[in-house]
Image 1 (cartoon, rainbow, N blue to C red):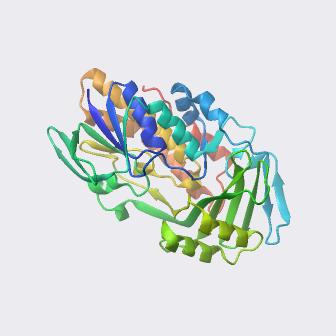
Image 2: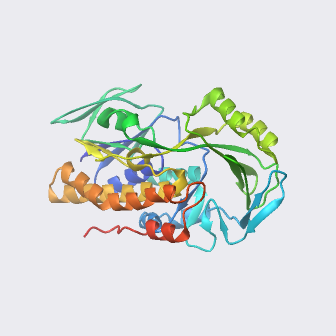
Image 3: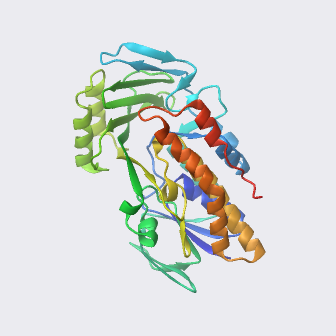
Length: 371
């Protein structure tokens, strides 16, 4: 049985682990975090990505933990409502669509539970080096013993280590979009009930929405800047606080919550563009290969659809007695037009969401079945 090492235990990596096992492979997932990562924002499963979830048998579980937003408000610097909608929200689009919004951590937990027993999960470790020969791809780990696999998949996000080791320095592929984001959790001191509130003033702003039966808030800060950003630690929190300090309304209390939060995340909004997603026995999946950025609203869809197509093509190659190279080529040929359309969503309307027409076209612009 062919062995596959998947770097990254997020949406893309855990979905691929299950789908590869279904196709007769022996997957191992290595994840730097000590367990499934908590925190993060709400994500959307739309269009053909919902078909992937249904084919995995997870539709009922995913819908059971979806967010239940009734609408949203936009407020000015003094908290006065200047816009209200009960038809759509900025985070999920139209509320009457078939799309599903849920917390990223809930989706990862469902996928991980589904793949447990089918894949080996190694937490608290990461890939240190890759060396390929005719026998396989030899992997050195930061902590664990060296091992050899038939294939390696980089599903390790925007700052992918597999991409750096197999394809080259990050700067060759990362294209910043001039916007930064910080996400963290807080107690629901605003008393929001299934309702989002958004505030913007100039080049900075934020959105706040309740989760966990309205017990907790997820806060997303955003600001325009071309400068690099610290991604974690006290320096990152201090930088975010400085960027947001001039905003009014509930900003002081949100900044206090920022410094108390345990699930803090910050990064630049950027896209990844490569001429090829495979190099020898290594291949990229999801944000590692074709990040569209959260501005597209389609990162989760790209991860799920990409995992399905990659597993499908590897399964077809295995059944036909082919090597991995034809499978990687077909995966890319099928996936790239879908990626191009969805990456374009992030740049269609700088400072705001893409049009409903563009989102509707992009989220369905692929077939899960090979020609």
